[in-house]
Image 1 (cartoon, helix red, strand yellow):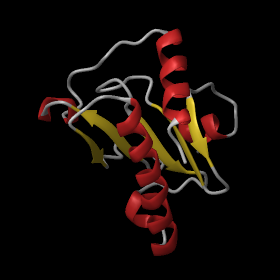
Image 2 (image 1 turned 60 degrees about the vertical axis):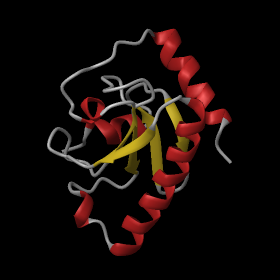
Image 3 (image 1 turned 180 degrees about the vertical axis):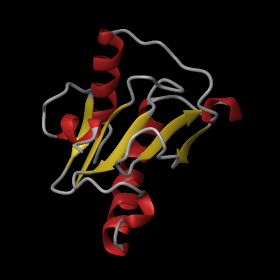
Image 4 (image 1 turned 90 degrees about the vertical axis):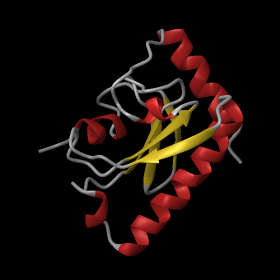
Length: 130
């Protein structure tokens, strides 16, 4: 079954894209824990992160790191947290979450942003990519 992330990658569903290359795709989470919460996913749909082959896993982590560095420059925060949960969508993904406090990483509290805020935030993060 095609995941919601594959539909986003294929352009069947809208998103606030941050970056992509031949293998990976990064976009803002539309139900964020904190402003700037970003998802990094492989374009090839694989259910679980640790089912990725070692080389793809390593490249996903490097891709995620580059996004995290840009995110830290774009969104004032104490640090960027990385979380891998993977229960909600059967497509390997990494959550990058700007953290002010541990509560930001708990997936309990959500932040509401307008379409304009999402669009502006995506552009701000993109501008920080190398």
